[in-house]
Length: 99
Image (cartoon, helix red, strand yellow):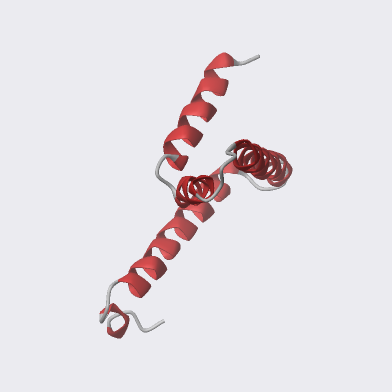
């Protein structure tokens, strides 16, 4: 097993999810229940399934699309999503962004 890759994936996912809306949703669910085990198991299973889909979809797509194109597309999507979030979050910004 490639331990460097394992710890890189763990660290990236851990830092990305820390304080994320997923963690806040789990926090909220656990405050509404006297038993935290079902919340833990449900959230853990969901994260495993989503990660499984991401890994295998990434493997499938990378077999047909060059990595450089994937990186460029991901960067463009990231910027576009950021602009859309800013547009909806900042009042009055939509008059400057007409799309």
